[in-house]
Length: 284
Image 1 (spheres, rainbow, N blue to C red):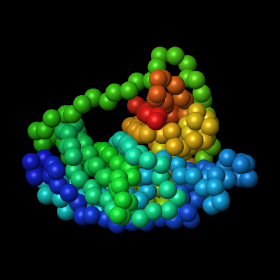
Image 2: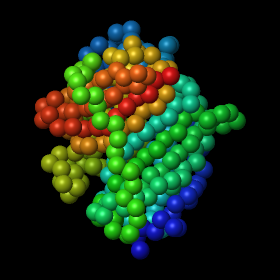
Image 3: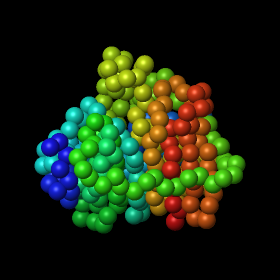
Image 4: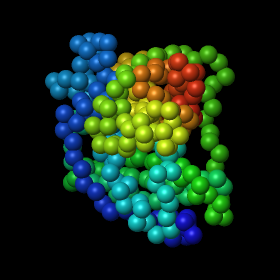
Protein backbone atom coordinates (compact mmCIF):
# COMPACT_ATOMS: atom_id res chain seq x y z
CA UNK A 1 0.00 0.00 0.00
CA UNK A 2 1.58 3.36 -1.04
CA UNK A 3 0.22 5.22 2.01
CA UNK A 4 0.04 3.55 5.42
CA UNK A 5 -0.53 6.08 8.23
CA UNK A 6 -0.02 3.44 10.91
CA UNK A 7 3.61 3.21 9.82
CA UNK A 8 4.30 6.79 8.75
CA UNK A 9 2.69 8.96 11.44
CA UNK A 10 5.16 10.24 14.00
CA UNK A 11 8.21 9.20 11.99
CA UNK A 12 11.15 11.52 12.52
CA UNK A 13 13.46 12.31 9.63
CA UNK A 14 17.20 12.73 10.25
CA UNK A 15 18.35 15.74 12.24
CA UNK A 16 19.74 18.37 9.88
CA UNK A 17 22.17 21.15 10.68
CA UNK A 18 22.26 24.28 8.51
CA UNK A 19 23.53 27.82 8.74
CA UNK A 20 23.17 31.11 6.93
CA UNK A 21 24.84 34.51 6.77
CA UNK A 22 23.93 37.99 5.59
CA UNK A 23 24.61 37.10 1.94
CA UNK A 24 22.04 34.29 2.10
CA UNK A 25 19.45 36.65 3.61
CA UNK A 26 20.07 39.30 0.96
CA UNK A 27 19.91 36.69 -1.80
CA UNK A 28 16.52 35.56 -0.47
CA UNK A 29 15.19 39.12 -0.30
CA UNK A 30 16.29 39.79 -3.88
CA UNK A 31 14.53 36.57 -4.89
CA UNK A 32 11.22 37.83 -3.49
CA UNK A 33 11.47 41.25 -5.10
CA UNK A 34 13.36 43.49 -2.69
CA UNK A 35 14.77 46.58 -4.36
CA UNK A 36 12.64 46.33 -7.50
CA UNK A 37 11.92 49.85 -8.74
CA UNK A 38 13.39 51.56 -5.63
CA UNK A 39 16.77 49.99 -5.02
CA UNK A 40 18.21 52.74 -2.78
CA UNK A 41 15.05 53.56 -0.85
CA UNK A 42 15.93 53.50 2.87
CA UNK A 43 13.34 50.83 3.70
CA UNK A 44 14.41 48.63 0.80
CA UNK A 45 18.05 48.86 1.82
CA UNK A 46 17.11 47.22 5.13
CA UNK A 47 16.46 44.11 3.03
CA UNK A 48 19.46 44.37 0.72
CA UNK A 49 22.30 46.10 2.58
CA UNK A 50 24.11 44.40 5.46
CA UNK A 51 24.50 47.60 7.52
CA UNK A 52 20.94 47.53 8.97
CA UNK A 53 19.81 44.17 7.65
CA UNK A 54 16.50 42.73 8.84
CA UNK A 55 15.05 39.33 7.93
CA UNK A 56 11.62 38.68 6.48
CA UNK A 57 9.68 36.10 8.53
CA UNK A 58 9.15 33.99 5.40
CA UNK A 59 12.91 33.38 5.26
CA UNK A 60 12.19 30.64 7.83
CA UNK A 61 11.22 28.36 4.91
CA UNK A 62 14.72 28.48 3.38
CA UNK A 63 17.01 26.77 5.94
CA UNK A 64 14.62 23.79 6.16
CA UNK A 65 14.28 23.35 2.40
CA UNK A 66 16.47 20.24 2.32
CA UNK A 67 15.01 18.73 5.47
CA UNK A 68 12.47 16.68 3.50
CA UNK A 69 15.13 14.80 1.58
CA UNK A 70 14.54 11.66 3.61
CA UNK A 71 10.79 11.56 3.13
CA UNK A 72 11.05 8.94 0.39
CA UNK A 73 12.55 6.51 2.91
CA UNK A 74 9.77 6.89 5.50
CA UNK A 75 7.90 3.58 6.02
CA UNK A 76 4.32 3.85 4.81
CA UNK A 77 5.00 6.63 2.29
CA UNK A 78 5.67 5.18 -1.16
CA UNK A 79 4.59 7.88 -3.60
CA UNK A 80 5.54 9.45 -6.92
CA UNK A 81 7.21 12.71 -5.90
CA UNK A 82 6.79 14.10 -9.42
CA UNK A 83 3.05 14.24 -8.63
CA UNK A 84 3.46 16.12 -5.35
CA UNK A 85 2.36 19.76 -5.00
CA UNK A 86 2.88 22.18 -2.13
CA UNK A 87 -0.60 22.56 -0.63
CA UNK A 88 -0.19 24.69 2.50
CA UNK A 89 2.57 26.39 4.45
CA UNK A 90 2.72 27.88 7.92
CA UNK A 91 5.52 29.29 10.03
CA UNK A 92 5.59 30.21 13.69
CA UNK A 93 8.29 32.66 14.74
CA UNK A 94 9.41 32.13 18.33
CA UNK A 95 11.48 35.30 18.02
CA UNK A 96 12.77 37.49 15.17
CA UNK A 97 15.15 35.69 12.79
CA UNK A 98 18.80 36.81 13.08
CA UNK A 99 20.78 37.81 10.00
CA UNK A 100 23.18 34.92 10.61
CA UNK A 101 22.74 31.72 12.59
CA UNK A 102 23.47 28.01 12.82
CA UNK A 103 20.47 25.79 13.51
CA UNK A 104 19.39 22.18 14.04
CA UNK A 105 16.13 21.03 12.44
CA UNK A 106 14.20 17.85 13.19
CA UNK A 107 11.39 17.06 10.66
CA UNK A 108 8.49 14.81 11.68
CA UNK A 109 5.41 13.41 9.90
CA UNK A 110 2.55 14.80 12.01
CA UNK A 111 -0.62 14.31 9.89
CA UNK A 112 -1.80 12.24 6.91
CA UNK A 113 -5.26 12.81 5.41
CA UNK A 114 -7.13 10.90 2.71
CA UNK A 115 -8.69 13.26 0.16
CA UNK A 116 -9.67 10.30 -2.06
CA UNK A 117 -8.04 11.72 -5.20
CA UNK A 118 -4.92 12.67 -3.24
CA UNK A 119 -3.16 12.26 0.08
CA UNK A 120 -2.25 15.22 2.28
CA UNK A 121 1.00 14.69 4.17
CA UNK A 122 1.89 17.26 6.84
CA UNK A 123 5.54 17.62 7.85
CA UNK A 124 6.50 19.71 10.87
CA UNK A 125 10.04 20.99 11.36
CA UNK A 126 11.18 22.61 14.60
CA UNK A 127 14.40 24.59 14.24
CA UNK A 128 16.55 25.80 17.11
CA UNK A 129 19.85 27.60 17.23
CA UNK A 130 22.75 25.29 18.01
CA UNK A 131 23.29 25.58 21.74
CA UNK A 132 20.24 27.83 22.06
CA UNK A 133 16.45 27.98 22.01
CA UNK A 134 13.78 27.27 19.39
CA UNK A 135 13.80 29.84 16.60
CA UNK A 136 10.94 28.89 14.28
CA UNK A 137 8.56 26.06 13.40
CA UNK A 138 7.45 25.19 9.86
CA UNK A 139 4.45 23.08 8.87
CA UNK A 140 4.34 22.05 5.22
CA UNK A 141 1.40 20.23 3.65
CA UNK A 142 2.21 18.11 0.61
CA UNK A 143 -0.60 17.32 -1.83
CA UNK A 144 0.26 13.92 -3.31
CA UNK A 145 -1.92 13.56 -6.40
CA UNK A 146 -3.29 10.10 -7.11
CA UNK A 147 -2.29 8.72 -3.70
CA UNK A 148 -5.67 8.96 -1.91
CA UNK A 149 -8.22 6.25 -1.33
CA UNK A 150 -6.25 4.38 1.33
CA UNK A 151 -9.14 4.51 3.81
CA UNK A 152 -7.97 7.34 6.05
CA UNK A 153 -9.84 10.30 7.52
CA UNK A 154 -10.35 13.33 5.22
CA UNK A 155 -9.08 15.81 7.80
CA UNK A 156 -10.38 19.25 8.77
CA UNK A 157 -11.82 21.62 6.21
CA UNK A 158 -9.90 24.85 5.48
CA UNK A 159 -10.80 27.78 7.71
CA UNK A 160 -10.14 31.48 7.56
CA UNK A 161 -12.36 33.24 5.03
CA UNK A 162 -11.51 36.91 4.57
CA UNK A 163 -13.91 39.51 6.05
CA UNK A 164 -16.99 40.33 3.98
CA UNK A 165 -15.93 43.91 3.25
CA UNK A 166 -13.48 45.76 1.08
CA UNK A 167 -9.84 45.24 2.05
CA UNK A 168 -8.08 47.88 4.12
CA UNK A 169 -4.99 47.77 1.91
CA UNK A 170 -4.17 46.53 -1.60
CA UNK A 171 -0.57 46.10 -2.74
CA UNK A 172 0.63 45.24 -6.25
CA UNK A 173 3.98 43.44 -6.49
CA UNK A 174 5.33 43.06 -10.03
CA UNK A 175 7.50 40.01 -10.68
CA UNK A 176 10.19 39.92 -13.33
CA UNK A 177 10.48 37.46 -16.19
CA UNK A 178 13.56 36.01 -14.48
CA UNK A 179 12.10 35.94 -10.94
CA UNK A 180 12.25 32.13 -10.72
CA UNK A 181 15.87 32.16 -11.90
CA UNK A 182 16.74 34.42 -8.97
CA UNK A 183 14.68 32.56 -6.42
CA UNK A 184 16.06 29.12 -7.28
CA UNK A 185 19.47 30.31 -6.02
CA UNK A 186 18.00 29.84 -2.53
CA UNK A 187 18.22 26.09 -3.07
CA UNK A 188 14.99 24.94 -4.76
CA UNK A 189 16.28 23.65 -8.09
CA UNK A 190 13.03 21.98 -9.20
CA UNK A 191 13.11 22.11 -13.04
CA UNK A 192 9.38 22.95 -13.03
CA UNK A 193 10.43 26.55 -12.44
CA UNK A 194 13.00 26.88 -15.21
CA UNK A 195 12.71 24.10 -17.82
CA UNK A 196 9.93 24.64 -20.43
CA UNK A 197 9.95 20.98 -21.48
CA UNK A 198 9.59 19.78 -17.90
CA UNK A 199 6.84 22.34 -17.23
CA UNK A 200 4.88 21.13 -20.26
CA UNK A 201 5.04 17.54 -19.03
CA UNK A 202 3.71 18.75 -15.67
CA UNK A 203 0.72 20.37 -17.39
CA UNK A 204 1.82 24.02 -17.61
CA UNK A 205 2.39 26.10 -20.73
CA UNK A 206 5.57 27.63 -19.29
CA UNK A 207 7.63 27.30 -16.09
CA UNK A 208 5.84 28.62 -13.00
CA UNK A 209 7.08 30.65 -10.06
CA UNK A 210 7.95 28.75 -6.89
CA UNK A 211 5.03 28.71 -4.47
CA UNK A 212 7.34 29.76 -1.64
CA UNK A 213 8.53 32.69 -3.77
CA UNK A 214 4.91 33.88 -3.97
CA UNK A 215 4.66 33.24 -0.23
CA UNK A 216 7.66 35.51 0.38
CA UNK A 217 6.53 38.23 -2.02
CA UNK A 218 3.17 38.43 -0.25
CA UNK A 219 4.86 38.44 3.17
CA UNK A 220 7.00 41.41 2.13
CA UNK A 221 3.97 43.25 0.72
CA UNK A 222 2.11 42.84 4.02
CA UNK A 223 5.07 43.72 6.25
CA UNK A 224 5.83 46.87 4.25
CA UNK A 225 2.25 48.11 3.77
CA UNK A 226 0.56 47.08 7.02
CA UNK A 227 3.44 46.95 9.52
CA UNK A 228 5.65 49.79 8.28
CA UNK A 229 8.43 47.30 7.63
CA UNK A 230 8.56 45.98 11.20
CA UNK A 231 9.33 42.26 10.77
CA UNK A 232 9.34 41.69 14.54
CA UNK A 233 5.56 42.14 14.71
CA UNK A 234 4.95 38.85 12.86
CA UNK A 235 4.28 35.91 15.20
CA UNK A 236 2.99 33.46 12.58
CA UNK A 237 2.07 33.30 8.89
CA UNK A 238 0.02 30.60 7.22
CA UNK A 239 -1.55 30.14 3.81
CA UNK A 240 -3.08 27.71 1.37
CA UNK A 241 -1.69 27.67 -2.18
CA UNK A 242 -4.60 27.91 -4.60
CA UNK A 243 -3.02 28.76 -7.95
CA UNK A 244 0.20 29.52 -9.79
CA UNK A 245 2.05 32.66 -10.81
CA UNK A 246 3.93 32.90 -14.09
CA UNK A 247 7.14 34.97 -13.90
CA UNK A 248 6.44 38.48 -15.17
CA UNK A 249 2.93 38.64 -13.70
CA UNK A 250 1.91 41.02 -10.91
CA UNK A 251 0.75 39.66 -7.57
CA UNK A 252 -2.07 41.69 -6.01
CA UNK A 253 -2.23 41.30 -2.23
CA UNK A 254 -5.40 42.34 -0.39
CA UNK A 255 -5.13 42.90 3.37
CA UNK A 256 -7.78 43.12 6.09
CA UNK A 257 -6.98 44.24 9.66
CA UNK A 258 -8.83 42.25 12.33
CA UNK A 259 -8.04 42.34 16.07
CA UNK A 260 -4.42 41.27 16.26
CA UNK A 261 -4.39 39.52 12.90
CA UNK A 262 -4.12 40.36 9.24
CA UNK A 263 -6.26 38.43 6.76
CA UNK A 264 -4.69 38.07 3.34
CA UNK A 265 -5.67 37.04 -0.15
CA UNK A 266 -3.45 37.17 -3.24
CA UNK A 267 -4.38 37.01 -6.91
CA UNK A 268 -2.67 37.55 -10.24
CA UNK A 269 -3.49 41.02 -11.54
CA UNK A 270 -3.38 39.95 -15.19
CA UNK A 271 -5.60 36.86 -14.94
CA UNK A 272 -7.51 37.61 -11.75
CA UNK A 273 -6.89 34.07 -10.49
CA UNK A 274 -6.31 33.40 -6.77
CA UNK A 275 -2.85 32.19 -5.76
CA UNK A 276 -3.01 32.37 -1.93
CA UNK A 277 -6.15 31.79 0.14
CA UNK A 278 -7.03 31.17 3.78
CA UNK A 279 -3.98 33.26 4.65
CA UNK A 280 -3.36 35.07 7.93
CA UNK A 281 -0.56 36.78 9.75
CA UNK A 282 -0.86 36.80 13.53
CA UNK A 283 0.76 39.78 15.26
CA UNK A 284 2.69 39.98 18.53
